[in-house]
Image (cartoon, rainbow, N blue to C red; front, side):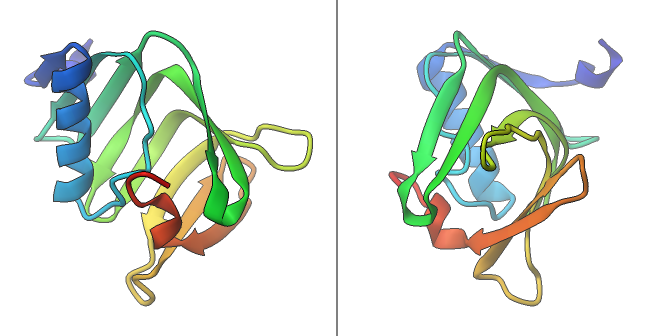
Length: 136
């Protein structure tokens, strides 16, 4: 795939998880934003910001502080930049009885304690950043 050209790729759970965490940290995103399990591969193309994560199976995580259930598919990808992941796929947040896909995650520059999740339907939800700290 052309998107993956020039990528740094880490294989295996331990190395992949380290890389995913270091990307979140480097770009100023909460370290608990992507609770992953059984990682197969993580890749990143510095020139474009394209990143991908492959894990063995889907993961559902309950962010207790905000009472929000989020689903992470086997394949997650998007473009990471400072305080933002755009064109995101593979992440869904449960709203009532539906699971709309999350297309963008962004920390508010004007209010750095807030993080916004935007769905493909144009719905944006805002939460405190600390709700996505590692271990939440």
